[in-house]
Image (tube, rainbow, N blue to C red; front, side, top):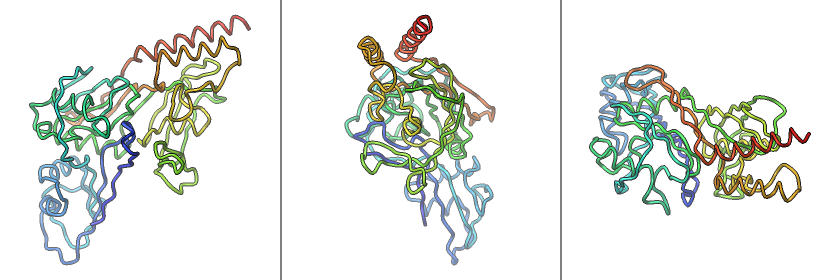
Length: 354
C-alpha cells in the first residue's frame, strides 16, 4: 500500500511549525488475488491503528473513493480497485494532560465548537510546549466526549494556526464531524479569511500569490517559496487591500490552500513581510523615514503588539451535522486594534502636513 500524507513538518522547536491542515490522503490499489470483501473490513485490516468506526465515518461522508467514485462502507472491493481516502490524522499515543484553561468559545453545538485562539497559545503539544496548549484545554473542556477521553494529541483538530496568530479554529466533537470537516479542507471548500498588516504599499487593490511552499534549505525553521515548483507544495493566497496607511497596508488574505506559515511566506515573497514578523524579516523598519521620531513610533507599535500582525478573521464551511452553509467571524484582538489605531493617527497626521 502506498500512502501519501499532507504533513509538512518544521522541527517543533517551532511550536507553530507544521502543516495547517490536519488531514491525510491515503491511496492504494487492491491486489490481484484479493477476494471480495466489504471495504470497511478491508481497510481496517490494511490501515494500522485505524478503527472500523473511523472507516465507516469516512465512507458516510463521501471520503472513500473507488476508481474515482464515492462508495459506502458496504461496498465490496475487487482486484485492482484503486482506493483513495481522506481522513483526519491517525491518533498519536501521547499522553495529554487535561488542563482547566479558559477558552473563548463563540459558538458550540453537538458536532463542533469554534475557538477564538489568543496570540501566544500553541495549538498542540510539541517540543518545549507539553502543557498550556489548546489541546490540553480541549481535553479538559470536552473530557466527557468519547473522542477526548483517550488523550489523543489531535482529537477534534482539522487545522491549526501559528502560535502568534490569533483568531478562529473549528474543532470537531465526534468522528462524523471530524471526517466531514477534514474532507472540506481537502477539497478546499472551507473559506478562511485573515487580516494582516504588512510593510509597504501596493500598486493594485487585489491580487493572487501562487508558488510552492516548502522548508527553506538555508534555515530549517523557515519556509520558503519555490516558484519553479522544484520543491514544496502548491500554495495559493488571494489578497485584497483593506486600508492603506502609506508605509504599511492592512490586507485581507483568503487561503485557497493551507501550508505552513503560508500568508507570512507569500507576503515576504512579494516584498511585503508582515509587520513585526521576526521570522520573515518584518521586525525592523522596512519603509518610512529616517527620522528618530518615526523610529520611536514604529518601536512603540512593536511593543504594543510583540508578535506578527495576523488574525484569522473568519471561517465559512458546510456544517457537518445540518448540511447548511455557516460562517463565523472574530473581531480583531486588542493588540492589533491598538496598532491599527496608531497607524490611522499617523497616516492622518501625514495627510494634514501634506
